Length: 351
Image: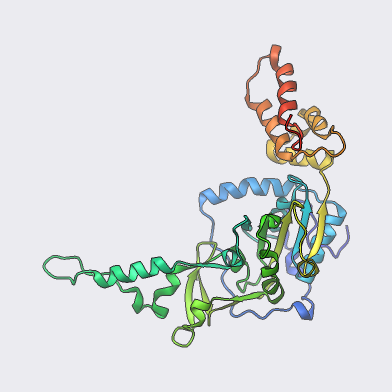
């Protein structure tokens, strides 16, 4: 395997990210003081990551996939990943984070109503106003009445930091020693304006929070909540990265993207999974030996007419039902055959 590869796709964590060369001069960012690494995860998050790590550890990318991931790492460019549903686009982001020790993947699932600000930050102006009104209307501590709590207005910036939470993109752009991994999932589902709105942020590696910029003179440093649930300091209302995040933009090919966005990205197309990759996916979900045990189901999934569309989730559903239904010896084979055919019906056929 070539020595230049930082991400190797071997499914084993290593310290390769420490050997990533400096960025090109035009992609060198100078974010402020570095933020601390994300705090430890709670048990429920650990359980969720356990499933993702299992998938990531079994992900075996092809040569082109490995090379383009590393090109994005070297050039500090987003990776635009296209392919059919279930081809492993999202798993790739988790595989990179797992192998390079980059922590939790920051996920931004895009829908038709998503805006750039959703990814950057949220400001709860109504909640702030309500809390100010409650604090100022509280009775004075006399005759047994409860003493008023601290007035949010007395905090730096009028307590505004309590009501600002960075989104997944905003958190990924915090100045950190190591790049975070950001998964912008199904960008093709977005409103027509979002891909264009992303251009400046992806190029500059920074964004501004106007609500904090207006207070920079009186409160140059304000603590806000990150997508990780930790408090981080924003200085002068500006967030600028230090290590450009590894950003994976996924698309199912439902629309074309503007040329300026394509110019800023490394484009990777993942083909429909072949038998070897499907077997790795099945092992990740159902354990060692599952691919061999359900080889006939995998073969049936791959046996399709030209143009038929199937998602890998259909294969997983058929295998899971085979495992859990508790059929008897007499009816198992016929029931499995019939339900497998129904569960793996091509998505572009309704009859």
